[in-house]
Structures are given as structure tokens and as C-alpha cells.
Length: 66
Image (cartoon, rainbow, N blue to C red; front, side, top):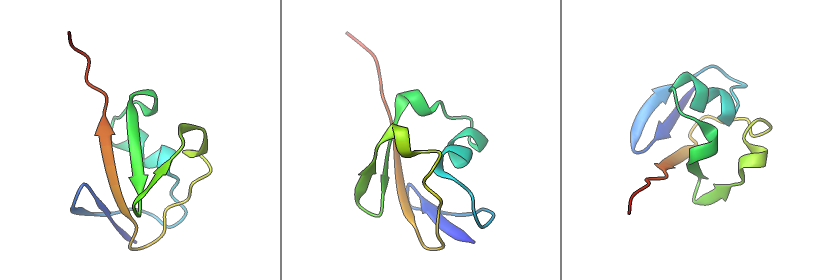
């Protein structure tokens, strides 16, 4: 199935969880915020959130500084 991640098309298997997608992309779920179809997904729900064809995801990283 196809989803959009930060505006780019990405193919993934049906039944892929948001957590699995983040891990496959080498992202630490503790330091990202994910918006799915214009709604923020709580980090506690990453593993239970199954992606659907056509989902639009925006993944944002926390950036430290000072």
C-alpha cells in the first residue's frame, strides 16, 4: 500500500504500524512527533496505530539547542 510521508510517496506492507514505520526509517519514536491525516498521534499509540492506504504522515523531529 502507499502512504505519504512528509509529502513523499512510500510503499509499505498492509498492517504496518506507525511504530514499525518509524523504526524502519531509523527514527527514535521518543524524539519525534507524528501527524496522521492532520491529527497528532500520541506516542503511546504508535504501536497500535495501523497505517491505511492513502494516509498522509508528517514526521517532525525535536531539535535541541541553546
